[in-house]
Image (cartoon, rainbow, N blue to C red; front, side, top):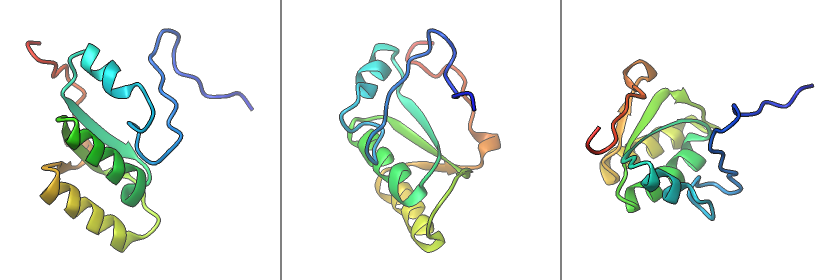
Length: 108
């Protein structure tokens, strides 16, 4: 089986814990590129997505969670996590179709 690798020259951050920010250079990389809005997707809604959204909020990033682009272990906890992100972290919860990756950098 061939490993899946990012294209040559792509920034790559190894995430070892629940939050993508925990002990990684992600915030630094995002600030260097003047990124101020993150779209979170994949898994696990009630763990990694929730903790990453909280860290992003604390670091003053805007957050959108792709509602149909996340997976969960427990549906009830996932729904509660999405509601927490919306209410307490001002996260936008939107379908993938509404999550664009347009250049939203400051001044761009």
